[in-house]
Amino acid sequence: MNIVLIGTAYPLRGGIAHYVGLLYKYLSRRHDVTVVTFKRQYPKLLFPGKSQEETGDPGIPLESRLWIDSINPWTWVTTGLRVRRMNPELVIYKFWLPFFAPAYGVIAAIAKWRRATRTLFICDNIIPHEHRPGDRLFTRFAMRFVDFYLVQSRSVQNDLLSLEPEAKYVLQPHPVYEIFGEELERGGARERLNETHPVLALMPEENIILFFGYVRDYKGLDVLLDALPPLLERRKVRVLVVGEFYSDEKKYREQVERLGIRSYVYFHSSYVPNEEVRLFFSAADVVALPYHSATQSGIVQIAYNFNRPVVATDVGGLAEVVIHGRTGYIVPPHDPKAFAQALNRFYTEDRFAEFRMNVLEEKKKYTWDAMVEAIESLVFTSRH
View 1 (spheres, rainbow, N blue to C red):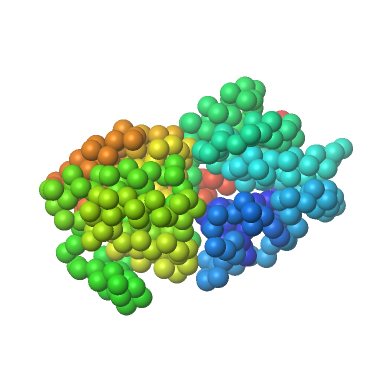
View 2: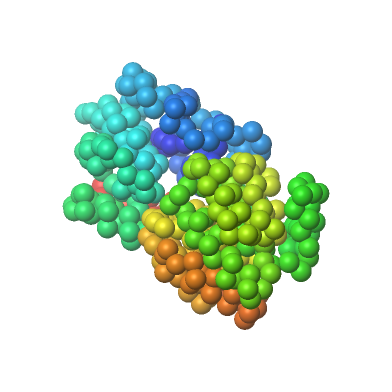
């Protein structure tokens, strides 16, 4: 097939760019794929981070067309015309925020008009974590021009069917993020982190819990911090909070001071270059996802790439991927005591080696080949 893939892509950065890069890599083995991305993804007023562009190793090199300005409708029209001239059989959009729905809808409408071109939305979310006026209106507009949907958790499936009961879709779990390389030996990873971040001073025998990724309020860092005092009564641990803050960093630092846990929490409040990601995950014993709400999380799939167990809350599709008692623990949301108990149980029962082996087996089902096959099956089956 001649496929156009539209979404965040290199030279832009972040998890969605990594996803698009990996999907491009695997789709390109069977199809002719062109990647279209944003020349401006977010206006500075709406972007809480420090930079929108990748500064380190791109991970997967690809050539993308920087055609779309998210707030300039004329670029939506010109992108639609450019895509139309390419006459693709399929246009795949990575959809995660209603903010982009008007642009996607206009592009799709123009590219599809009186053509056999079909449209597929890969949906991280249908209804976003942080609601804004117009979300449903924008999403419904874009959905008018969508032929197929790929959802990655049952919660997103339910949201899709609530808006589009007759949607043609497939449920295919989020694949593992293999873009960051392979697992390192734990002690060696800690030594290398100490070289690049001397203030850490990680010890080989320390209990290290990792909270990773862009920090937004819905991700529940407050729950993890509240869980630390009761956990510290039972054992010494250190939490590494690693990622750029998209919410108020000050309030979390104040929470740490208020709880008296400053010696046990390390903030690395900057974007982590691709080449450093494996150091943090390989140095950790367990990855914490204390989310207040979720659909699915790419962080689980990064953890699984490095064979790391996960303790997560029972929200969205997290319990579909984190297998309670096998690859980690699932606990009720908004419950610091339960989160502390799960982490304590992980260390008390010394489950690292067992859970690591279970992750090695479990992650075999989360492949990019399976993602490509799901797309092909959905599109080809619906042709007849």
